[in-house]
Length: 417
Image (cartoon, rainbow, N blue to C red):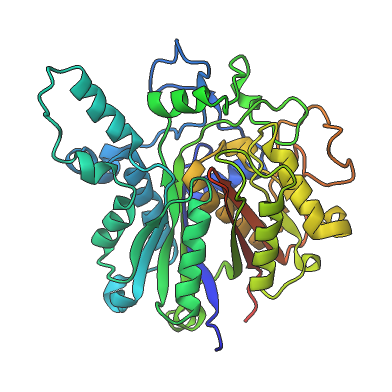
């Protein structure tokens, strides 16, 4: 069977370092940190008092106050980034077969703020179950693609992928496969997350997963640095329009890049910790390369999962060394989580956007906040520390790994007709 080619024709982003794709990219290449003291709730009794929050987002202005109240922030973020992507792609759905356009979305947790608010209200009451009628439809993780399809009248496949921090990489892979198999012409794909609240920060603190560098939040996300002490929570959304090549050409779409492969695997090791030898990570990168009919020698840049945790970063480097061998010295590696924090289920989408723009613009976003070399890492590896680097890029690979041992890796290439 001959696969259809799949291209990227639209992008949208709402991130802690920019509320549009252009602002996000500008923040990335200039090494801007999105971390600051949390403003959305009182952190006095919390171990971690900072995060990478979205800034200046006006849900009421975008949606109207009445509609905004019906939606959890993770859905608000999804609709906002998707509107930018739809406009960027020049889509007029009245002229397209919407039965062949779907939405596959990723979210690791879904409506945590809604769940927290409703349960706390009940707990403070007299036991009478006075729940908001929007409680369940606001909270469930699948509701974001539902609202996107309703807004634009899209009747193709519609669902959410939930695989923790690999969720939106999985959404991209599923969308890619439906299109190349000829099952659809286009997908709105990506992910959103909104977990910066008492339950999200408190829960990750209880796991000792978050950085507690409260005296210097802006430098707290330190992937591959000797003094890294945990990840920094982030929030936001990323949307990517994936489209069958001939369909895109027929409507005169601009093309950012081509998606050529995706791999999935499981660590089958531990509930939260990665395999100590990086076996699952190595397997998923090889699976993506095989799916794209590529070898490690074809890849120029790896946008790594790189969360800034003491155990996670070394395992991913081990995996890359295992897969790439001596080619590891030729490629660039960087973790954009050093700037955005960790957007959990939205991480794969916003990092795929960073990878696509790196490919398009010939600039590698940096891994910021590097102060002290970790002797565990080969000093000849180019982690793109602190400063963006220009280079010609033809192929880029982007990794996402999640609690439960979920791994997903995607590959994009420079588009050639």
